Each structure stands twice: as C-alpha cells, then as structure tokens.
Length: 179
Length: 117
Image (cartoon, rainbow over all chains, first blue to last red):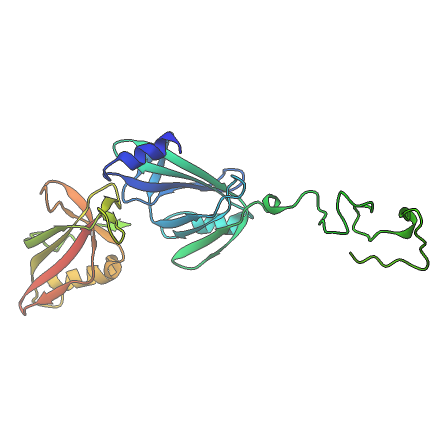
C-alpha cells in the first residue's frame, strides 16, 4: 500500500477520482489530453481538457500493465484523425485524486491493441505485452522429458543408443518407452 | 460548441426554477455506513425558465426563435450563451435539456430547461 492509497482511505469523500489520459501517435506529433471530469484538470504542467470516456485497466501480469479498454467520445477532439492517420497510438493513463490538489495514485501505459469507431465513440482494446505470458525455456516437461531423466531435453523419446541397460538385464528388439 | 443567442429574441427570463445536478457517487453494501464521493469536481445546476415572445406575422419574434432553435442550435445539439441566470452579470454557456415548449396564440410563453456547461 502506498501513501496515496492510505491518504485516499482516510478522506471523507470530498474528492473526485479521475483518469487523466494522454493519447498520442508514436512520434508525439498529435497529442490529446483529456480527463473524465466536467472541468479541466492541470497535472504535471499539462492541461487535461474536460471530456467523457470510460477507461478500464486490465489485470496486471507479473506487476506489468495488463492491457485495458478505452471508450471515448469522438466529438470535438482529434481521436478520429489519430486513428486514420497513424498505424499505432500510445495511451498513457494516470489515475488521480482531485480535490484542492491533484494527487497521483497509479499510472498505466499501453501501446498494442485494436480500435473500432462510429459517429459517437471510439472503442480501444489494448492488449498486454504478449511476452509476459511466454514460458521460458520453451520446453514442456513431463515424466519422459525432465531434468532427472537420462533422455535429451529436445522433446524426443529416449533413443536406444543413449540408454544403458542395468547389469543383468537383456534387451531385445526395439524399445517403445511409455512411462 | 456554443452559439450566440438570436439577436432579435428577448432574453427576459422569468419564472425560473433552479436545482443542483446530481454529483455524488455512493458506495454502500448490504450493511454498514455508506460513503460518498464526487462524480465531478465542478458543481453544476439545471435551470428552467420562460420567455414571452410575440407571434404575429411570418417574421415574428417567436418564429425567429423557432428557426434559431432548429437551424442554429440544431435542435439542442449545441450549447448557447445566455445572460447568467444566477449572477445576472455577463454571459454563461448553457445547453438545452430536451426541447422547448410553447403555449399561447399572439403571445407565446416559451419554456426552456437548460444545464450549465
């Protein structure tokens, strides 16, 4: 628990929990800063314009951002231009507590995803980094293939050439190991 | 986007009702003391008021208002500037809630409900 969360819990409720979002192209040529509030919010030297949207962060993966969704109105802003002009967009989100001051609670950042839009709103679906769910090494261990087995770790079954029979054991014919 | 009020339509609002807009989000479970916090940082209000307009001839004040509402205000899709209904000083941006209603013959009594922007 960080200090901001503790601060949030002690307060009486005279605050607004807001998302500050920055939507931009990869080169930051076009930048859109908006807040889901009915008044502008200044944070970090930037003004976030009052707008309406719904942002929902995905579940974190190993402490990293786990994707998220953003539904945002497309009227009176540059969202459609950004979607049509650029192959990808960046979304930086800061969750803040707004009362007499603006206090940062948590930040999120997204890059990969897809978007669909109509005349009213654009719906972004940001995916988590696919590397976060990769398994290393990419070998699936089972009773036949494991670190304690004499066989190789390449996924093949034990070949006869790598296997030495126990003393007194006679083996004839091909071996078909099924353990 | 906000548009200007029609210059030929009066701004003498009367019979005004004012109410604050709902701005509290409530967290409450099956039992326990409910907690509340703000939906938005700015407290906004809604106002209902009336305007009296003459309606004689094809180019009457009321008909100008109707044309302004339909073609300039786009039926309420845009907002407009009107003398501040609380401070009575300067102009404030308002947005219609729903449509206007009018009663009367030669003199129309037009009712409008707006919200602060």
